[in-house]
Length: 198
Image (spheres, rainbow, N blue to C red):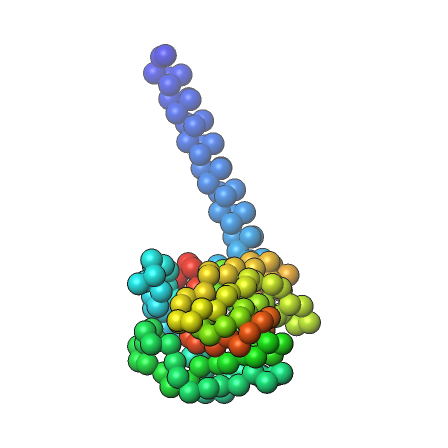
């Protein structure tokens, strides 16, 4: 290929790459306006589940350690003395949440966006708990955790935060709802994974 021809193709290739890059930036900027990826809370992050092979960074949900009574409790749900023994919040707590079958607990609203994809906590006792993300009058199921006789981490449950945020101009205020399906499970240290902040 002659030098002028190679130069022409090189210039054309550069122009195409620049145009594609500009288009990608415009699309990602427009998309970021709909689904924000920046976390909307500034709570400290930790790795509370690292010893269970989960290296993700999490932040404690509002009053998620149950050391204060910031949750709305119904159907006999109540705080009880005793806490998960691993002190994953930095110090061992004094309280946890007990949910008799049919009872529920709902956190105060917290800001979520597409950067908050999952929730995880500790569970013990008997029975099972259904977890939902509540946005306005809508409850979106996130998963179910089954209690055992020892305190163990729940499965990782997706919060559908990207969907909720997309329906709410990029950021939404949602609550976590924990409802006992069976038994009398105990819960402690509810965490949210902001994902992109890790």
